[in-house]
Image (tube, rainbow, N blue to C red; front, side, top):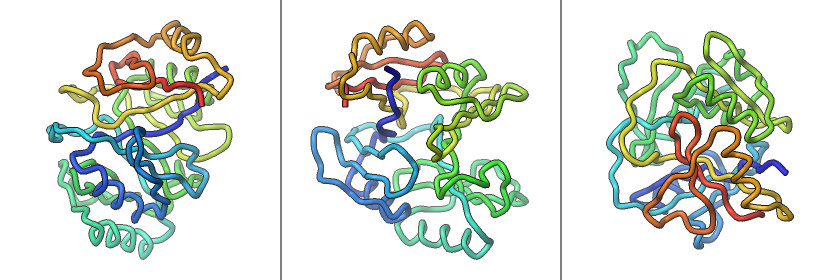
Length: 240
C-alpha cells in the first residue's frame, strides 16, 4: 500500500533549540528525544510530525521548501509575527519590495517561512500551516501526487499543488526557474509504509514513479534514502 507522509525532517545544529521554537509557534507537543531525533506531534489536522536531527553543517543557501502560515486578520498576522520574534525568529530580506502582504521570517537557524496575509483564497480552508511551499517542477508535483496518493488541487502554468484527502496543508511547487542546489537538502520528507507494508516493495514502487536511490553519509538508518525527479532527498522509513 502507498506510504504516508510520516514527518518533515529538519537538519539542525541545535535540534532542541529549533524544536522549542516550532513547538512554541505551532502550539505542538514535544515528544521525548530518541533515535528518531526530537519530534513534535501535531494537535491539528496537519497529518505529519516535525523531526529535528543533529548536523554539523551550517545553513548556507535558501531552503527548497518553507512553511506558509495563515492568519485570520491583520491583528492575528501581527500577533503571529510577534510570537515568532519573541521565540527567537527574525525578519528576513529575500528581495521583497515591502508592498507584499505576507511577512517573511526565519527561525533561529535561518529556515525561511512566511506569515500570509488574511483573505488568501488559495489557503482559505487550510489550518495554521497553510502550505509547504516548494521550489520544484510540474513533473515533481505529479510524482508526489502519485507517491502519496494525494490528488492534484492545482495544475496551471507549470505550478502544481497537492493535498491529503484528509485535509491539512497543501504542498505546492512553483515551477521554473528553479533555485540552484548546493549540498544536502536541509528539510526533507520522511515517508513510511503502513505497519503491515513492505519497505522493499514501496521503494520499488517509488523508483518506478521516477525516484532514484542515493548514497548517504550513513545518517539515514532505519530506512532507504531516495531522491525525487528534481533531486530532492527524501527517506522511506521502515513500516509504521
